[in-house]
Image (cartoon, rainbow over all chains, first blue to last red; front, side):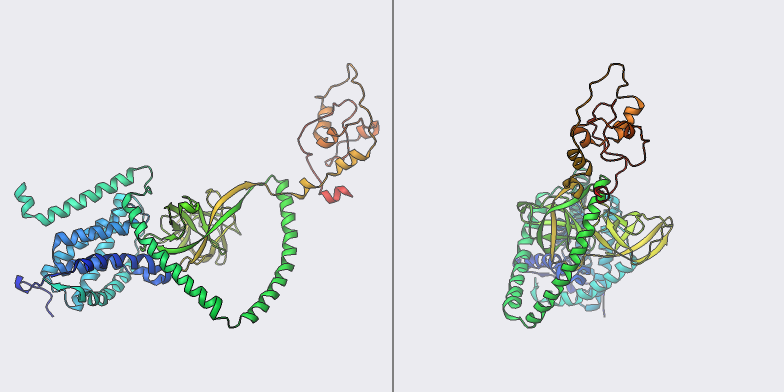
Length: 172
Length: 376
């Protein structure tokens, strides 16, 4: 399996119909807000983050990726009781990183998707906690075991979710 | 400079977006009310919650039709069981009401005040924040239904949390297992005070209990009532694990209300400080009855040069004289009665001595026998 792509010709850039580009993040946020009430174990998933990563690595445009991440993060912030911008900053960086990485790596393969999501989940959580502790001043506790397990679970879910979302993408 | 920005366009945009968000965060953190809802928050909540409410209400309707009209198997047997249970509960209620009236009498004697719940509003849980780091819920009722910030949210089992933000049609509830939550609580058995809040993994913890306290698994944790949000004595949870961490104990709780499966909750919309109603207040006192039955004797005219109230004897008589006796035509006592030494328990019918002026002091007698004993 090749993880790196050195030739620009090998990079495939995809786009999404505007309806899908708007509905996929909206549904992800709705899923995240609604279903954990009915099924509490779903709380461990961060579906908006998975969608941010997917849109980033698929569209491979850093500006679009960071703007998408920023909007998704801010809406997610709106539903929490934390100040606006905590998820916004974390997802902006993840969106930018995923788009930049998508240019360099083959992110069509399940294993690479798993590893990319695993890494970005931990980066996202690290940024989130750093902003919460450093800028907002809330002493949130960091549980290594829990975060590593959550990263694993989310990476696994990403493989299935990305395969589902692949149906909506169109070659540019 | 312009070339640099053009050359690193993506990085420049990233920096601009991040700086604007950091600036926005700083403004929110510095503002007096960080929970003040900016428009984006109001819009996001107003967009998401109607869909959640629609699904929850549709689900409830389908469930109601199925269980109220279609799936009625075992209802007769359940009805019989419930009737039997009602009979048992009635017997228990009689016993408990006796205990309660006794407790009210004692509380009245101690001048004890308690916060009672005057009104509650049932509400349905329709959504959540969707974040592991923000353990909060959304209700299907909001400001227009009378919900306000800092109202307590409970279930029949125990405490759930408090309202953090009230929107027109929904309200956000901060659960007690959130890391930023802080609920004053005491260990019921030891009366040791601590703070309940959540752990990063969402466990409910009791903090700030000194390590030398003998907290044990199974101990009940109740609210202190000191925060002005929750009434005193509501069950928060039970201790399931205790370990020592430096100066304080690390106590893990099992929340009384199942915070992971909340469907309906009660919001306490009105509380009031009330002194418990006492049977003593309603029933006539023995001193009053005796004062009415004894024949009235006119007051002696005041003799010039006689000791006035304010002397030690008069003061002692004042101190023990019941208010009602003085008020209901106080009469001079016979000399033998007046000369009796002051015992620890004054006779309730005793009137002021001949030299003492009738008193209207509202101070109660220093020691009172139970009303039933005095009546005998």
